Image (cartoon, rainbow, N blue to C red):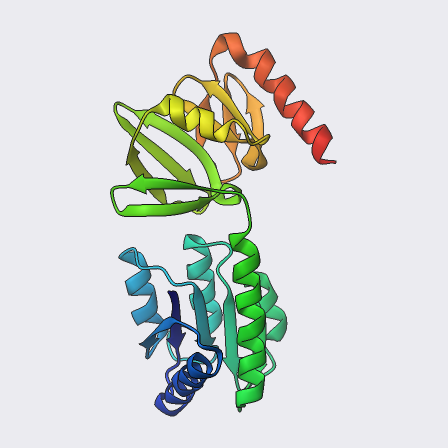
Length: 241
């Protein structure tokens, strides 16, 4: 079921968007759950506790935290989830691109305009779901991890930790050798150390017996593997060009 967050300080506008979502559900036979927030602080507070949504509908002009401010916070947790801006002003349209908003819709929001916008968003979600991914059984339940979001994996004792690029860590209890078998079939992974697997998409530098990722995570490289890892990364970069 798709989880939608709607954030608007205007109760009438908030009710209008919820009504449009309900109309869309009936018209398209669409299953979703809508959660409303009256300001950006409420939404951020829920995100900090670990809650996530599949779509965010944000008003831009709100007291305290603007929709752009909220979007920047969301992007710290999730780099790809669709963001929709609903606003009465066009002045923030350019800034909305900085947080990779899917759409910027001017109020008043008609049924036709809303339906078209949500159609486009759901197409994007469906396309993302076709990306390479693995399914893991974590402490929180069954989870799907996009390869494009997975920065590195490490094993500590009997626990395997999947580190996503935007900071989330998914902890599982499984064989690290089976994890290696599962991930190494993708051409973007290398194993620089017996306890780590790294996604080369996120490598910034390789030097001094360590790998530094774009999110500043530091991964050790076994001394005997330094030359091999550098060559693998060079080959990967040449193939990507």
